[in-house]
Image (tube, rainbow, N blue to C red; front, top):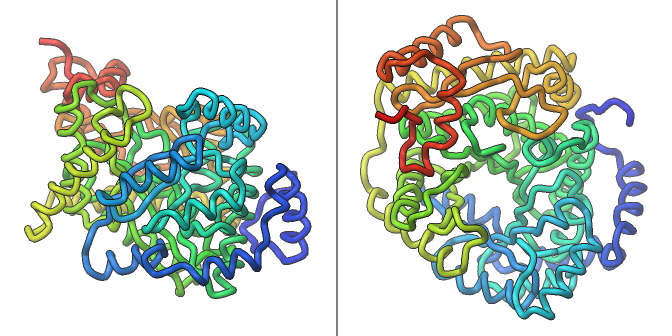
Length: 483
């Protein structure tokens, strides 16, 4: 593969690639861009995802969105219609076979699900259902629908779902590679996602706004805010270059209220800084807060408490949208009833604090300053490595460890950065690896970790990291040693 660059794909390159993409599976040739435009133009306002986001942002409301997807079209429609009264926008979570472009196996899953009378896939195989099936889904629900998946190569999935009337598309070349894939070259996934973003850009140029949402939580396990912020900013810049104009940047709940509020507030400010400095001015920016993405307590009451804490933080941080979890997270794919329970608990918390003053104070301001210093330090080095090109810089940054995502499976990720919680549960840096954080920032992290070590009467060590990963399942945030 030739060296990746952050350059808009020209029409000839895109069109040639598009002809190949649409031949990847039997449903691809049914994609008709002009027909997709007409369908998108005909969508009522109630089904337009970007409009729902912009109105919520303007009115300081927080939208709720579950995660949901099953194998068969009729059952998936019934699932979404069962969730619709409890949420504001709808998902379509894609199955694992489709995420890995294994469409023949997805079809076998559909066939076996029909024979069994129940879904034997962990999501909706949109590529196999094709434009017609996806269009019938969009027509059958009354709220906007987003594609949520985890696919390094999501080109055919994007073509089919956008042509069918989905008005929001999640993912990115970094966030849907490093946390999800083992041996997919980062250059390849970034390039494939440039195609997805250029497709969205073409809709935009024809007057159709499509929302794009990079995946914020990454591995969902002890991810320092600056790490997910840098990925979100990089993927936002890559998308803007291809013509995307409606972006929702996300952050996954880390557990400490002060740090989480500071993180989401800083994300919007930092994104505007880098987008505007890169010369992009005409865009719509919103935020999404993902409730706890790590291990969940098995007890439903305890799991509901985790959900409610996420709702509290998201509202205090003024997130535009919350991705809502369920009390059954510890036991596998949740039922519709479990999804409804998570949504109802979240709605109750959001409503209770909607009119209250938001949390402010010096601790939040201090966290914002630390996150900003970290993001700026890493972004400066990425731009230097890429000689001003953020696509090239991102690939090189992961290669040498300037960017490093904790606990990620990808071979493209160095895996030296090690996080740990401090005495109050905020995520700190135990080992920065090759990430170029400022000396004063690293000293601040060391002091915070030492404070915890003194409180627990033990040396700071990797054992703390292991304890923290396991803690929430045992109804704690910080992995304290047994008394």
